[in-house]
Amino acid sequence: MNEPKDILLEKQVIEERIDALARQIDQDYKDKNPVLLTLLKGSFYFAADLSKQMQATHSIDFLTVAHDSTGMLKVRYPPTSNLKGRHVLLIEDIVDSGLTLHYIVDYVKKQGAKSVTVCTLLDNPVRRLVNLPISYIGFTIPDVYVVGYGLDVNEYYRNLSDIHIYEP
Image (cartoon, rainbow, N blue to C red; front, side, top):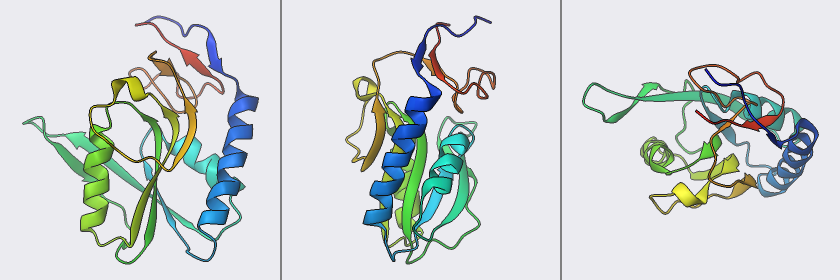
């Protein structure tokens, strides 16, 4: 396995941007008590840091999706919270094609959420295959593979504090 290459985003830059996102979300969600629905595993680090910076009352829950034997996306571990009538803020580590997130937005809407918005740490619009509104974007990145800060290659490198470019 190759080692990560150059640092794309340093820890301090990531922390500063998360603080700014938290302030923006606080304004938009004041008195709405949103649930931060976090896509595991990669979004865990981002969601935890974002949640710690937010002042608005909120809860946090988790969701895991995976491809079944036919290749179709399925919710493997649904959230434990009742999403009906709730404002849901989907927390994602990176949006590439948008296909997985599009599936999850539909799933959350079917659960009866009052509103569904997306917050992603990284956006790679070059790879987008579906039109997907993203309300909160940490960073728009070039079309490179990245690891660190929750992003992985075969479950490795999630623990890196910075986000690195990775060349398979």
